[in-house]
Amino acid sequence: MEIGLNHYLVVSALLFTLGLFGVISRKHAIMVLMGLELILNAANINFVAFAKYGGMNMDGQLAAVFVIILAAAEAAVALAILLKIFHHFRHVNIDEVNQMKE
Amino acid sequence: MMNELSNFSGELLQSLSLFWPETTLVITFLITLFADLLSRHKNRLAGYITLAGLIVTGLLLLSQQGVAQTTFSGLLTVDPFSFFMRVTILLSAILVVLFSFSSKELVEGPFRLGEYYMLITGLVFGMFLLSGASNLIFIYLSIEVMSISSYILSGYTKHSKRASEASMKYVIYGAVSSGIMVYGMTMMFGLTGTLNLNEIGMALQTKPVQTMPLLLANLMILVGFSYKISAVPFHYWTPDVYEGAPITVTALLSVASKAAGFAVILRYFHSALTNGGELWQVIGQIDWHFVISVLAVLTMTVGNLVALWQNNMKRMLAYSSIAHAGYLLMAVAVLNNTGMAAVLIYFFIYMLMNLGAFYIVQLVADKTGSEDMEDYVGLGYRSPLIGVALTLFLVSLTGLPPTAGFIGKLYVFTAVVKAGYVWLAIIGVLNSVVSLYYYVRVVRNMYLRDVESQGEKIVFSRPVLTLVLLLAIPTLILGLYFGPLADWASASMAFVTGH
Image (cartoon, helix red, strand yellow):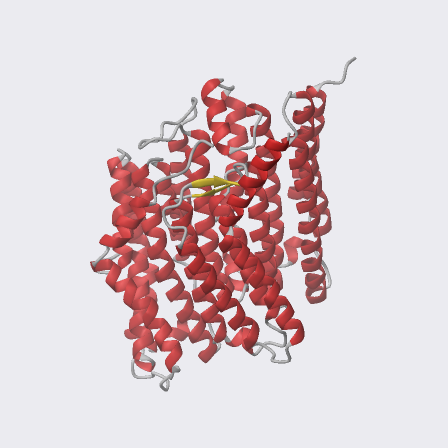
């Protein structure tokens, strides 16, 4: 069986769904960030797959590189912020960080 | 080959010559960094450098009036529309830097302020890019540049629990929504084979794609944009971030960040999903008017209704800013040039009145140590000028004449009714009526409650009062004499399409 565009798209759709599920269901902030990485990697797979199989130019590959870089930057900032949260609250459970109320 | 190369470098040089305002911002960023490292003066220097840098940026920006060109091989567009947005963003950034000079929580905090001003410059840089971005990846890049700066800024007073919580909520919600957005962008890339907005528009016109994937892809992209403008249901971060972040940062986020968000929404819909012209004709089967109208109705209704129950000024203004995003979305929903002009006019006015309101909340919080609405009792007598100015800003936010807010709303509602969306306009007017309650509640606290038990007078310094007047007087004048602003906005309608 030849591996084609659709296979990649199915994998990326699965990754995206798993990532989104992780973001929604997990309480621990680190797990949420991991879910987020899955979402971004799903996007990367899409970009590269479209660039390779869709008969398109290098834009897709380049875009994937951009997404990787920005994901790293964002993760760094997010982890620094979570470190601060840990200093204040001694945990990083998103649901329980709730100083400000409605 | 050689020819191609020299063509490319020629275009690059030409693009760079139109990139001066942004370049100045980067230079300011670096100078602030080094000055902060080298100087012993704790706080002031970085602020002055940033202020000077922003003013130079403004002067360079003014030289771009009327320019309409795509630069960097279609990545960034310099056109009258992005000019208008960048002027609004820059003005609000300059005002916020001025606010920061007198902000107690910043100046007296146990930290250096060099990074604070640097990040503000970075934020403005991101917003400048976003207001001209015409390529999907470039949009993502600019959104991230501004988001990353604003995540850190909102938690800048890091000894405060509230601020840390605010920045955590901001980063988690923000990262997820931009992740979803970028996935939607990959789908658009797959459907059309290009990342350039104008080429996407052309591709959609020449070879129609299936409706379902197109709808899904654009809804996902809209998630990212809606998050930036805090439209319901992607607004959950707004109240907490606005309440927890330093007030100056809140003010900047509520105005400039939203301006950039609306800029990208308008450009995206204009270039990619409609075929342009005076009346933008939507490409394909999807009724984008309806989708955005629903978003607008949800946003203003939720914003206004929840604002009714708030007792914290910052939180109330957060919900009010959600409601204002709803009014603006109403003008976006008509998707034509009148609507767009209304957005621009409204934004300029919104900048003045909203920054004014936030500034006064900052001043009062610095003097009384409280953002609670109850502590505004008798303020009108304790500090007459501040009381009058806050009343003016709140009346303007409600949209009553003779203030500028009325003119903004007038243009928005006219655009909506002209395009035949009377039901939408009616919901908008009803919402404005609701908003009257929570704005006037503050005014009532200031003037009509417990007048006997009024506290001692609060005295503000002269520069502070000047700044308040600088915001209050235009808010009043633009309510009576708005011709030039309206002309400027309608002259800013020219998007650059094509290559």
